[in-house]
Length: 145
Image 1 (tube, one colour):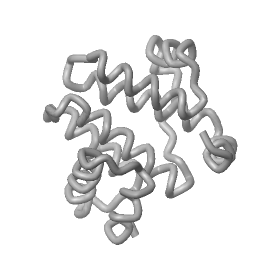
Image 2 (image 1 turned 90 degrees about the vertical axis):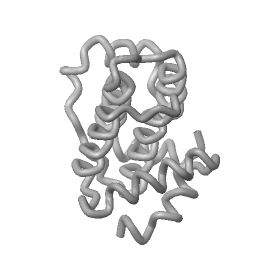
Image 3 (image 1 turned 120 degrees about the vertical axis):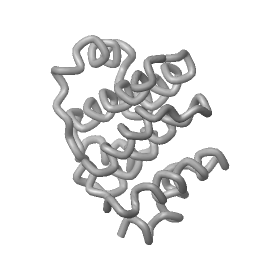
């Protein structure tokens, strides 16, 4: 984690990060199968965001204790959407419930409804091609502005 990411976490607050972890857990469980591949991705994203495995287990045990929060920072909001799309796509089988949930998160994050389908498709393609959230955000900047 570089300094700007740490600074961003400080600005956002742990509540937003915990909300993100809860959202990722919901996405992983949306298809009825929380597989090891999804759990490994969840642990990796948690670590990047300064969330310990113990905290992650607490969030998973008591998701109702975590309030949904939309990041105020546009870059962090996109990164969270990117992570959600990555979670949805990790098993190479997008379940209809996962797609609905991802769409809902995009709406709640404030993205324009008429552009969400294209936005999610581009994010998925970029993930498949190995591009990170920063590179992907540059590619979709016209869709999200």
